[in-house]
Structure formats: structure tokens, C-alpha cells
Length: 145
Image (cartoon, rainbow, N blue to C red; front, side, top):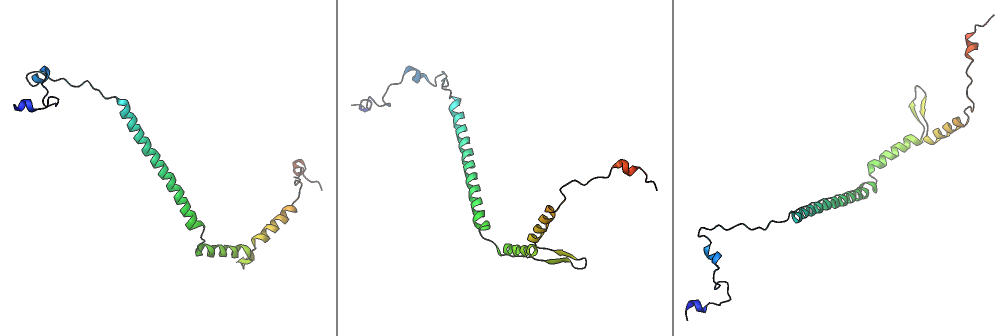
């Protein structure tokens, strides 16, 4: 038995060459494939990737904003600092007690609640009618003596 007969006849190696395949490289050109890829799947893939990135960035941005607001509320707004307590105590002292603004001129700061009471009392005692303007004709006429 020869070596050519020992090869399996169904294997691609043992298959005989076609006439076209046998002539390749002997003066004949091989043409390019006619397979042109469709542009739609490529564009759709690019759009999907870009949209995925945009949505991911938006979700991370929103999550970060919520997280930061929560941290600010937890760390800053819930705990009152000693400086803030001192400031509020000083403001309450100024707004709630009598004190001299200028003792030489006789200017006195009064408590805020007392200032509100005095303002309301003045408002309630204001005149309810318009002030009468003098008649311009009477003011223009000279007085006779």
C-alpha cells in the first residue's frame, strides 16, 4: 500500500484540487470578496455604547449629589458647633436685653420683643384719615391787615 492510499479520502488534505485552485498563482488574479458589511449594526453599536456611558455618568452624578447632600446634613446641619452656639448666644444677648448704643447721645438698644410692641402700638395709634393739605388758592392770596 502506498502512502497516498493510506490517507483518509474524506479529509481535506486528501481532496483533489479543483481546476481553479490548481491555477492560482499561475498568471490569474484572485478577485476580492463581494461581502460589504452593513453600516447600521456598527452605528447602532456605537450609539448604544455612547448612550450607556451617558446614562452611567448621569446615574453616578445623581448618586454622588444625593450622597453629598446626606453627608452635609449629617455632619454640618445636625451637630451645632461651639462657634455657632457662641454666636447665637451673643446675638440673643444683643437682641434680648437693654444696652447702651451711645451713652453720651442717649441712644439705647431695646429688646426685639419690646421694639415690636412699641411699633405695633404706634401703628394702631396712627391717624386713619389723610392729612388735609392747605388750599393753594388761599395760600397764594395775601392776607389783609
